[in-house]
Amino acid sequence: MREKMKAQLMDAFNNPSRKNCTYSFNAEQTASDKLNALTYFDWTPERSLDVPDNTTCIFPLGLGCPKIHTSENVIWADPIFDADEENFVLDPPDVWSGYTGKILNNIKQMAENLPEGVKIREPDIQSPLGIAELVCGQGLYIALLEYPDEIKAMLKQIAEYEIEFIRAMREVAGEKLNGCCFPLIWNNHEGTLCSDDTLTLVSPEMHMEFSIPYVNMIADTCGPLIYHSCTWMPEHFDNIKAVRNVRAYNWTLGGPTDPRDIIREFSGRGVIAPHLCKNIHTVPETKVWGDFADEAAMLEYILDGMQDNTSMQFWFGGYDQDPETAEKLYAVLNERGYTPAAHGY
Image 1 (cartoon, rainbow, N blue to C red):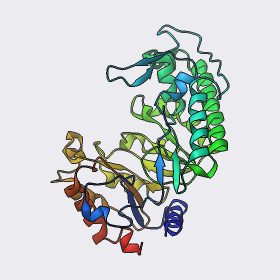
Image 2: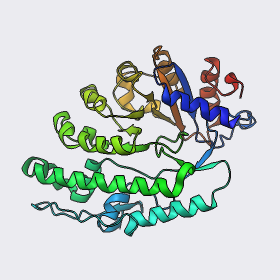
Image 3: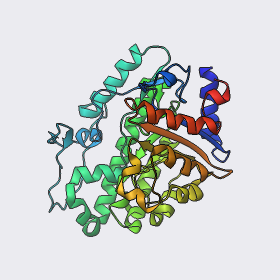
Image 4: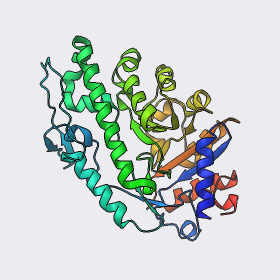
């Protein structure tokens, strides 16, 4: 059954213009006796374990940024370059050294001791421009205007460093890798996340110039991509369409853009894979496109917007202690024939 489920999920990735819908709770227990009693209550044929020491700052730390901690004790990175910097030349080390080496060794140890039927979830892969923001601090945005050629040379270095890391990670993890860090869905060992949250921090024109070419370096060599940016606006659609070799598109449903607009624009290009998290329907930004009694009502609205060429895959997060809502979400999906049970699993 697990192999059949994996084949069905891969078929959806490989044929995104075929109408389909699956979902993941990341195999977490839901505190619902009803759901926990099912053989499969979500489309997670194999659990994925997180890599120890994973952080958004893997690559800035690997490139030499000093490690610091936020007030919430989260690992972060101090910039390498000063705000008035004019020289943006990096000296990338071997990926097996420093912080990236620490992550690779953690993956290697996991792969050597991984139980049967479990995968390793890929660590956080940020876009080169997102990494440059951490390496340079807020001075990056002035530098984009004053030193565009120097920044582009640095972005190329960062992309090459990430590609080297991804290749090393695949070599040690092999087919034990889940090539999707986020959202928390099942994926095989192919592909990689690229989290491009600078999308809304610069103009679409600057994003096209300073992010897309370097995202595409990763897409062309290490794709297919799971492409993520937290917030999508219609003015960004053309940029996102310029990203090559995309397997799945992810964003948070707690933004101001109607997901039906995203479904209309991107169906058939890849799996539409947003994340729907607990209480997301209460976020003020969603009131722009809908006012929902609960997450189940929001889910119904989104599903009603699917087209004949729409393939969707949701991640539902935060419902491990909310059995009532988890059961409501499941009921909506089951009624429409989108649960594993409805497919005979």
